[in-house]
Length: 147
Ligand SMILES: [Zn+2]
Image 1 (cartoon, rainbow, N blue to C red):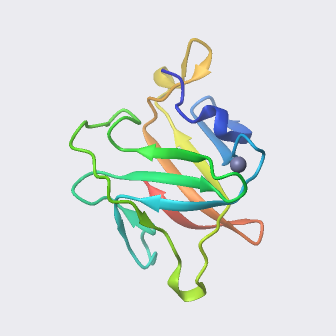
Image 2 (image 1 turned 180 degrees about the vertical axis):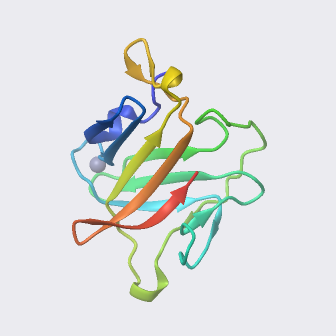
Image 3 (image 1 turned 30 degrees about the vertical axis):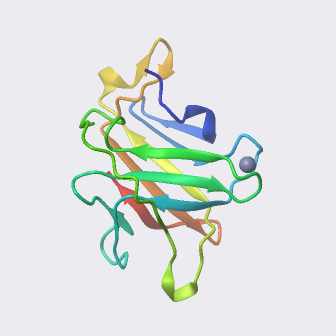
């Protein structure tokens, strides 16, 4: 299976044939999203803002322009360690309380074992790690998830 959200990635860069990074982009071309998740939010100090709850995590993005919804990461179907289990439907909006911010641009990075990097010429959904960082002032800021 090709990387599930490949069509939602912009500005893809490849590193050494074993990693890629890209910016999350809606089909309408917009890069700003609200996020919702089924995990637990932390203060984001020495940890990503969102971690698993009951061993599962779905991170969902909603385009602030057209409202399209993208399941960006789902621990039950994505990556080499995907574990199917009962899906949580309790989606919590992600907000950084300090600054009351709830619209974000993000960059997503995938690390692979070289053997699983591509499938039929396309990046595969069998990545080892997925890191999502919030872009702040044009630079990579805190991690939203590190899975
Ligand atoms: Zn959109």
